[in-house]
Length: 227
Image 1: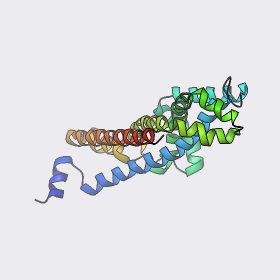
Image 2: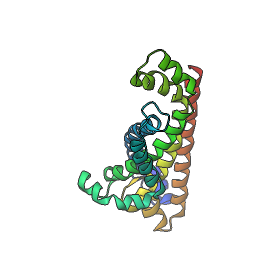
Image 3: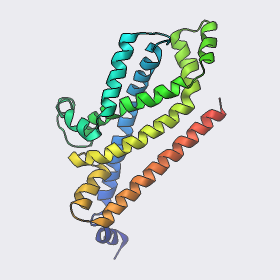
Image 4: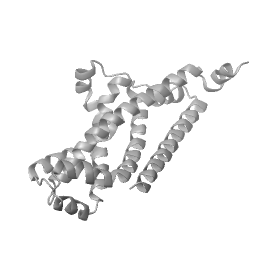
């Protein structure tokens, strides 16, 4: 018996099926993280710039963004997933599959990222901003040359934390036909009482988290050394 046959006998699925599920998880994680991080950064900048005492203080804009972030963050992902089905169908044309899951995943992770990045930006010493203003820097220059570079190591760690949370959401997306490791665990593991496969999926997710955290820590550490 070759190793692939042994794998199927042990876990109840073929090796290519596992690879397909891993690919779907990486696909959802990668695209949702990319889009969600960009939106989260923009929301975080609005929160920092428009807050009381900010460079572009605007109570109305701050209140709107702050309330939106708080509302979306307070909703469990499974509720967000179902709630945005009409929007998902409008954008993608269907509510199942890895691509369709990107819509609720982005909506879920972007406010979460916004709050994490906001905290990182607020850690920057006010003296840095004051020095930039004394040199006559514009708001755009302050953001791109002073605020973001100073906060970058902390932002990397914040994004690492957000990515781990997003990984858990991609696993939950499998519950409604999103594919990925979560779908594998539910359809082929839990529903078929296939406990070896359930354990395998848990191990895979744990390894994912460890690798993500290790990568985030190393990148953040190197950025701090080069400041």
